[in-house]
Length: 102
Image 1 (tube, helix red, strand yellow):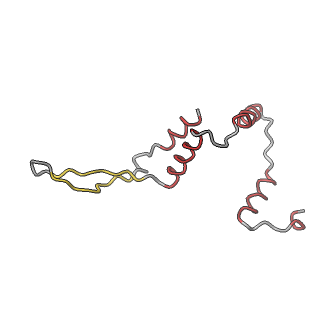
Image 2: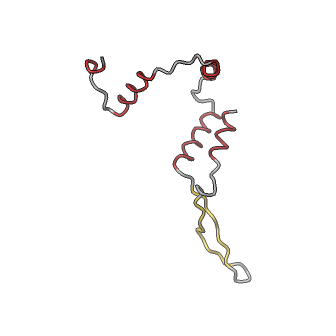
Image 3: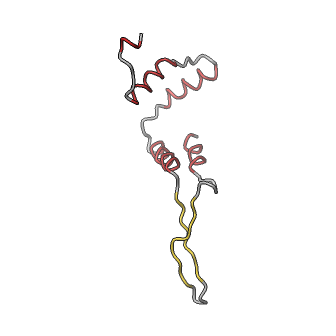
């Protein structure tokens, strides 16, 4: 199910697809034929890579995902905003020291 959703997201919209002729060829009648190329955005490429990881059975823990979905559906999932904020600050390397945290 996840792979189907990712496939739907990976499919570029006409606005996202950068289609341009890359090569001109002449047919037997002298008319030129263009060869088209599609260039995916970085985001689409990342989603495609994620889809391949999911298909290969990567580190996605299906049990944990089911537990989280059930908790969200029941309204019992607690989002620890302070932990998320500190993790983001640490990730960016701008977290204050432990003394400032309190």
